Length: 515
Image 1 (cartoon, rainbow, N blue to C red):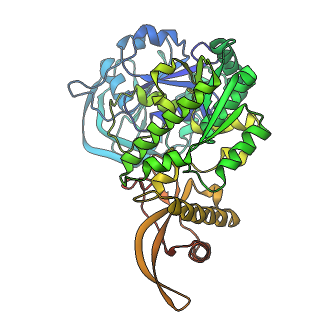
Image 2 (tube, rainbow, N blue to C red):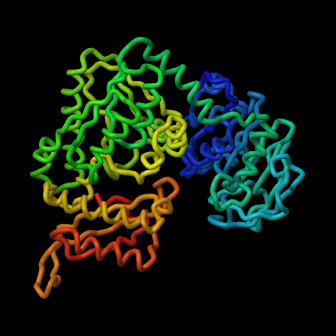
Image 3 (cartoon, one colour):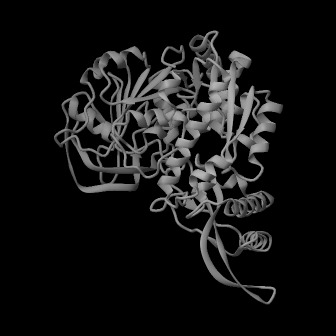
């Protein structure tokens, strides 16, 4: 979207865990934002024609050798700049101020005393709670700057040079813990950068359709439709532009939730009229999975098998020039992250590994959107809300919700338990309060009693969490009567299960999924 006429804010990423949150807060204020690596050249930065720049936080200290530095010429572009945390310290260091280690580090909640004469802090109360996360502090202002906010530990918690329109904050306005943080960001966007609040899904659709038409032209495109939010929205958006020249392939891998394959075909082929073909490859997937119990091996097998099945189905479509993928903005950001290669927690299965010999150009119409924006876009495109707002589902499906070996019998038992769990959650009116809920099959047998007879059967673990974005999560506290009904139904209705347990682990240290 770099050529769009929308007002834009550019965010230079120095590695903060909150960088994506800054971009989301800007977009929630209806101003378009993009995240770019901190080391982008001045010519590349200038080409974005941004109305303002935000320097993100980061884990480094400007006092250490090799700390990330942006091109100092950004301070000569003549546009407003807001530094946050590390961004504040970098701005101070580059512009001639002094940064030193704090005698007392400041992490968590602090009270900010506000100079309300500053255009950045205008309209705020005299004192507000803010969220701090730093070990360095500003010892000397750069020439032209003065303090506009302080805390008990930081006499320079906020500074400004209004003549050059440079502002900096030691705290994080983008996090929910900072009261009035959105107002601070909006003061920067509207009053200082003069951005217009024109970013919306309507404006995105118009621009995206132009880009799709230009990219695909009169060619044909292929899309691997999983039934998940991302691929579904991407497919419906592209179909609006090229119609039946989009060929969608839905691979039923036998690892889906109860009746999911039927629902996908009913929604997308019948209701939304997609040019969709289903390939039932469940036996092929299950045969490949039969000999492994290792989570990473399961994921790799599923990924390789999917590529093979999809490749074979694609050949039957004939010559195709383009591959449509539901890549989202966080995926793009992570691929150019300041942090470098991340530790592999889990291998995520997607279509990114399709064979090079397919020789298709990739079209990613959602690559500038966050997940919440994709859902809003889906509503604009007429996709049913119940599909768009379903809980996340892993690419490898139920294979990573069965601890140990994946068998048809275990899949059947898990599907039934999972369906009961979700049905009872919906009945209790709790579904939308939960980020993700699912059942896990545990091949751990324990003694039970049913009908005066001893049983020795398996357990089902239930997992339900609350979260904003899946990066961190807390377990959901069910009312006892709801949990009792769920457990009773699973034990009574699912064959081979005599015990139900509830997972009360948070993320971190646990992950949301078990495998």
